[in-house]
Image (cartoon, rainbow, N blue to C red; front, side, top):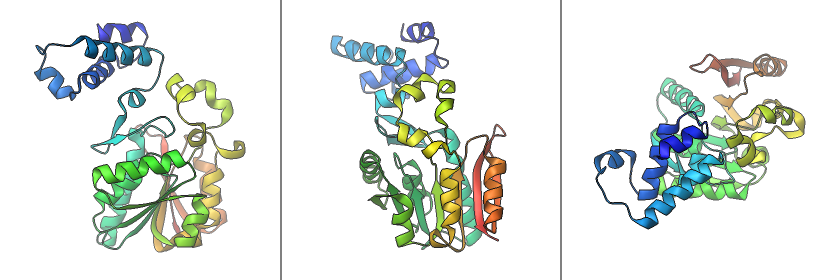
Length: 275
């Protein structure tokens, strides 16, 4: 019944989402849901499941309903006020791990996450790059609180700071690795976004400042010397139309740059180094 309801609402992954929502209502994992198919369901649990399905039918993100989203094999707590972690952002972690391996290990590696949101990048890097020292910063109090909670819950040592990201990091830098998933969506692109994104996720984390999708790349490039140590690099997630412009920005400042495509061949991550 849950799957059929979501299918009537024309949700693409109705079966998966129905399982996630029902499992959440019953306090089970998806695996436990399958193992306990004969488990009696109380009227209170039916009410919780019904409420969750109605909310999803209104296109509220499943992550906000269940309060969590998987990222790099770990469950991160999420809530309204922070961006829902995306699978494509995991590519930044892959590239960071590759860079750490090329360096000979992460021991003592200074890592910064600009605009930490839920903390999915900062916390994951702290756990994946053993021995690194991770600093995360965001201008949103909600994001800072969510990152702190996820770091504590997952056992990651992350320094989490509130403030204008570049000023905070420049005062503490330079870092060996800077990562960021900044806002790059143009306001006029809002009608193209899924309702889950357009109507529920925080505008501050979605839309490019001053209508400039390259705003954050430009600022990182301009302050690169203060942010990134010699031999270090920056990894910045991109929107799909940014490749040529950001490469030109980097070249104009004398930085070596390349853009990594994701699995769907979409230009996804800008890598910056000193030339």
